Length: 89
Image (cartoon, rainbow, N blue to C red; front, top):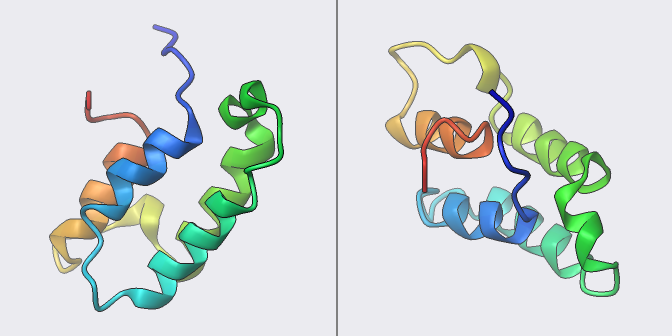
């Protein structure tokens, strides 16, 4: 089943609400990345061109985001599920 592409700004808004405030470096880096997109064409926000750098930021701060285990914090699972569109938000 093909999923409809999502605007990275909406993904960002959903993700940032579940990240704890203590993860300020991650929040700041995501925020700065999203702010850098203000001058791109809106249709680009749905492409790999923005999703890959966004994912790289997540992986930098949550290194095992793909292979989380039971010892990881709940918010990391939520971020992963939102990013991969496992949650229908």
